[in-house]
Image (cartoon, rainbow, N blue to C red; front, side, top):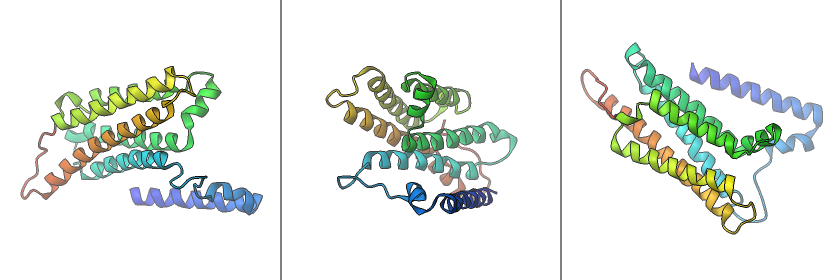
Length: 209
């Protein structure tokens, strides 16, 4: 089912871009196809890395969904994994296309508050669906480090002057470090399900909590 949805989505996406070129000519549609290039080698490398980590995290949760028993016993676990797919897929889109910055201008609020809202939603999901208090110590550490770097990024974005020395480097690197530890969080969960899948005989959910 997932493959069919992806193919349908890809088909709609392709038709839209072909339609744009038919309506507006090649020079206009090039805006959607252009390579990311700039005045230096490795232009936008940190954003590329950050988006890769966020979408990889979403992908790992998608794999975890497919490896989780669909019985009612694991309904909440699957719901949590699905919520993580949506959260991290959105954050990847936001990082690539500056969605929260655009919303901040439209809503006339500090755009850092939008990311803070997403962060608070993630905390709620972790406690109510993700049972974070029962997770393994390594998962808790990864989430703590991710939250710490996320708080640093949000604080810098909200409080420091935009042209202050080192503001940009520290803010973006804090974001990328947060995304790295979120990737580790998703990796450990996915790895757990793979280990269970390899076990012979009747499979029981071992606790990673």
